[in-house]
Length: 117
Image (cartoon, rainbow, N blue to C red):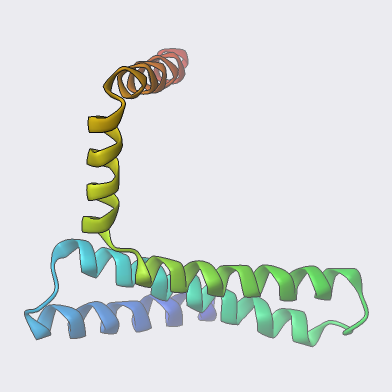
């Protein structure tokens, strides 16, 4: 539990730094908080994997998962919302019919999931 509290404390400090700069938006804050938490989990998992025997399968899977989480954290940090928004808008302009079908299918799936609860 100590690791989780430490991760939350560090993430809170990061969020405070970004809010204090005045340059970031709410989306940037959320993005950096998520990336920070992913990185903290990756570090904790990497430490636990290092404690295990290096040859055991669990340790190898732990290392791999730690690397993937770290890569995910970096991807989240580098994600550009405006660029993704522009790509989606361009796709919708190029194929509006397909976009409507996709949106309808997603709506039906979400509706079916919510109806069962």
